Length: 87
Length: 459
Ligand SMILES: Cc1cc2nc3c(=O)[nH]c(=O)nc-3n(C[C@H](O)[C@H](O)[C@H](O)COP(=O)(O)OP(=O)(O)OC[C@H]3O[C@@H](n4cnc5c(N)ncnc54)[C@H](O)[C@@H]3O)c2cc1C
Image (cartoon, each protein chain N blue to C red):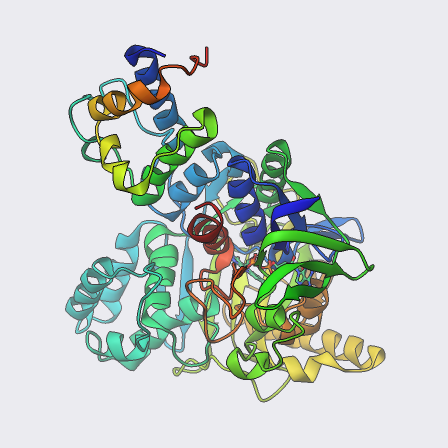
C-alpha cells in the first residue's frame, strides 16, 4: 500500500472505533486525541485492528507513533508496503 | 479442539467478553448451564406473556451519538450501533420517604432543584458533593475502599437526605448492607442520577438478541445446557473444564462470570473459597403484575418509585421473609415510547432473606409466595394509585428462583461483598468477570466483560 492507501486504512479503523465522530475535517498533523474522544481503550483498539487486519505487530514502546495521522502513516508505510489495500 | 478462552456463563458479562475475543480472532467457547442466555437478566414466557427476569431500566442512559460515558464506550468496544439497543428514555422517577419526596429524571437539574426546595440548608453541600464525585476516578481497578457514608457525611448533614440519595443507589447496586464502597456509590450516582434510565421497547430480549447475533457472526461458539461441574487443573494452572454431562473442554484461559465463591468452588484444589470470598447475602423478591389497563390511565405516570416507609432506610438482610417497609415500584410502560406497550405492567421489588426461602417444601413455598405477593401489593399503595382491581395475572420470583437459574449462592443479585477488581484469582489463568469483578448492572456487567477481556485475554 502507498501512504494514501494507508491513510485510508487508518481512517476506516477510526470510523469503526468511533462511529459517532465526524472525521471529514481531521487535521493530519494534530493528535487524534485532541480532535476526537479517544480514551486509552480506543487507542489500544487502533493497534489491535491493525494486527487483526494486516498482521502488523506494534510493540507497546512504539504506540507513540500512532498519535497523529501523519506520524501513523510514516510509521506504517515501510511496515505495510507489501500489504494489499482492502478495496 | 483447544480454545484460546473458555467463558463460564452466557450472562451479559460473558457475552460481552465473548464478542471482544471473537472479534479479535480468538477461539472462544461460551458455556451456559441454563437453557437460554441472559443470566440475571434473562427472559421467559409464562401463561402467554413475555416477561423479563430482571430488567427495570437500563442505567447510564446517553442520547444516540453521545461520544463519552459508559454506554458509548460499550457500544464502541463491541462494534454495536445505538440502534441495536434502541433505548427509550424514562418518563421520570421519584424517591418517596415519609413526609418527603424527590423527583429525578434524565435531566440532572431536576434533582438539584428538588433538593434545593426540600433541603435548602443542604443544597450547597450537595453541589460540593457533586463536584467531588465528578473528580473521582471510580473505575480505576486498583482503587482503595472508602465508606460512602463517611464521604457523603463530609458534605451533607441531614440524615433524611442522605438516606434518600442512598436508597436508589443501594437498591440498584450494593452488595453490602447499610453502606457501600464510595467508588461504587459514584458509579451508581452517575449511572442513575446523572445519566439516567431507559429501556428498549422489547425489553432485555432486544439487547440479548443483538449480543448473541454479533457473537455468532464473529465465529464465537455458544453451548447451552452446558453447566461446568469442575475446573480441571494441572498444578497451578487451569487446563479446561468438565461439564455436567462428562464432556471435557480444553482451554488456554478461563474467564468465569459465575461469581467468585461459586467459581473457586469449581476448583477441586481450592477448598477455602468460603473464607476468602464469602458469597453475598443481599437478595430480593420481585412480583410482576400484568394489568388490564395502562398504569398511566390510573394516574401513575412515573417510571420508577423507590420508597421507604421509615425515615431511616434499612438496606440489609431482613429478619422476616421479606422487608416491605421499602421497595422499588417500576412500570415498564412508563418510558417515552412512540407507541405504548400492549399491556400494562407493574413490577415491585423488596429485600428478602435468602435462607428463609431456600429450602421450603414446595407447598409452603407457594403459599408464602402468594401471601407476600398480596402484602407487597398493599404496601405499594401508599406510593402509587390502587391497581389491584386491574390485575390480570401475577408472577413472583424469590432468592430461590435466582439461585436455581443463575447458580448465584443465596440468590445474591449483586454478588459477593468483596470484589476482585483486577479479575485475578488464585489460579494463574482463571479470571473473573461480571458482578464479582465489581462492575454490575446491565451496562456495568458488559463493561466488566470487556475490561477483563482487554486486560488479560487480548494482550
Ligand atoms: C431481579 C433483578 C432485577 C434487575 N434489574 C436490573 C435493572 O433494572 N437494571 C440493571 O442495570 N441491572 C439489573 N439487574 C442486575 C443485572 O441483571 C446484573 O447485574 C447482570 O445481569 C449481571 O450479569 P453477569 O454477567 O455478571 O452475571 P450473570 O447474569 O449471573 O451471568 C452468569 C451466568 O453464568 C451461568 N453459570 C453459573 N454457573 C455456571 C456453571 N457452573 N456452568 C455454566 N454456566 C454457569 C449462569 O446461569 C448465568 O447465566 C437485575 C438483576 C435481578 C436479578
